[in-house]
Image (cartoon, rainbow, N blue to C red; front, top):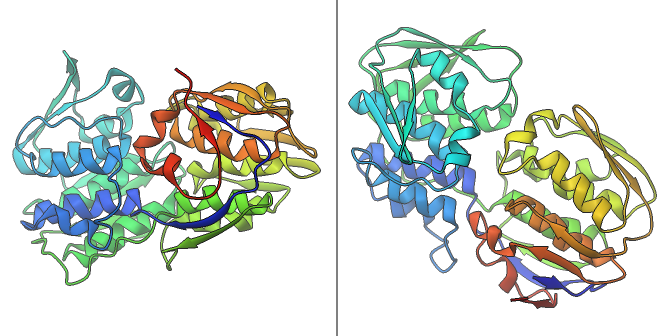
Length: 374
């Protein structure tokens, strides 16, 4: 995809459903015996992203072997859920997703994963009363346990070991579990769950996707004029984008999806911006910290990679040119933002990767000009 440079976008964008919230709602609806499509009420006219589509398919095949695409969250949620229900978990998984890792979850469950012919298999009876989970790399392991353990017929304690990351997403899971009738309470060490019967609530709290909103907020901060509808109050930590992007030093430990956009915005202002809490992001859809540093440098900017940080040396603009977004939707969004401050077009290889979270992105009516290169 070739993106014309220097255009200041303008228009209006409605937010799709939050991917994080929708996946949680879809799985809880399935466990409630409800219609998983209810998770998307109010968003019926919008295209469904790949991760949500795979979540809906997996929720309707809890006792089967669903294909879960490239969603690490879905993989890490489905394993404890299906073990709680059937004492086995079988998922069709891409090798690169499996390689992103479930070691912390397997250690917690004392389970040995088998990966053969594209199928991830785990067999384990969840008969413990205490589960110790390492959340220093991802909170998704903890969220999966929080959804699954109330399905058991006995009380369980979840103990968090090592310093946890992305705790706002844990609070999101706590809220969703409670909204669906799960009995869960915080403790000094983590959480305690009690046997529960999930039920569909009158209102399913799926709000507009604030990580997607951040793309257009970044464009606005670089001279765009885009109205964003559907940005209601939310537990999503990505709602803090504009606050973080204005700082010369910030941490993305609780909002890892914002790293590429904060770095992109930093390219358009004078001064040095240091973004910390990036070390664990090397196992996202790509090596995301290295990816955004390479993109900025390839387009004529200056950025450096540290062990747990990305440093951007901002100036008036970039040169433009070609960049590799590593099949990572977050990097593709950032590259598009960088075209606004580039003196020549920006060319993205594999621009279709945005389908993971926003299949309608290239069709948004904001005045940007794109050309597909065959």
